[in-house]
Length: 349
Ligand code: ADP
Ligand code: MG
Image (cartoon, rainbow, N blue to C red; front, side, top):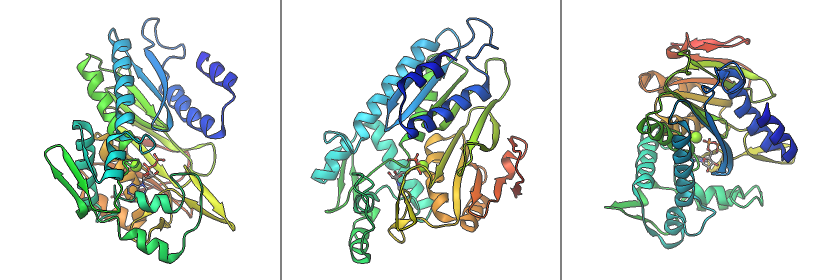
């Protein structure tokens, strides 16, 4: 448990420990790196802080170390290009100048974001940033804005105001983009590609609790990825997977409280306020990390009924596990055999 000891000495913030718990539990549940793998078979792991969160990257086999180092470089590069906190990032330049040149990855993320936005009837909206700013989520100076202010910020989130010509991207006056709802999923998929290109066939990454796995565990068994319970330190359950991302959105991740009401960081673009859809958490299981991330945000906003009909329409693309605010757990048919839980749950068909 060397990793645990190292972290304990750092005596970090609550959020830090929460993120760490998820990373560690993913590791413990997968059984990697904690003794039961044969010597030389316990993989190479690197922990980094990027995209505002703690990340753990693990690969197995001869090329593990090189693959993990390349993956870490990629994450840092993506972070530099995407960060709204870095005024030189490609996204920040667009937000301040109204025009920017996007490199291939950022363009991919933009295109994927627009695709998910269309698919979800606008529940996912990469132009939601002005509303995030209004509520203080971007600065930490939280406030509950007036209806009037919400209305005027909603005038700036129409994605039709985004123009693409070659690598040049433009945004209408007042628009600002933010890929926080998809970046980690895009990044974990990009890591899987790097691992594969390096010849790695087995690996697992956790980017702030969002997990993606390559292949199976080195012993050929499935990876056991835990889904955190939104209301306590336990778990909703475990999904046994290979070659999949398991990505969760929940109102418990980032929020503030005012007069006894909790306001979280997932904004419903149809109201300009934190989504109140009756869901506590949405986990998406998919081979496509960016899609999983975007949909976790979108389905959280949609709520149970819309999420279920959306899945029925796109069931080949993903599965979900959702928890409602009356404590029910729903999992879709595609992961019926993969999902395990000590709680009661219903299968959506
Ligand atoms: P987390 O950031 O905890 O991983 P999510 O994947 O749900 O959780 O992403 C939430 C982030 O997505 C917010 O911090 C914000 O940057 C962005 N966001 C908020 N509302 C939306 C929305 N309706 N569409 C797209 N992105 C959003
Ligand atoms: Mg998301």
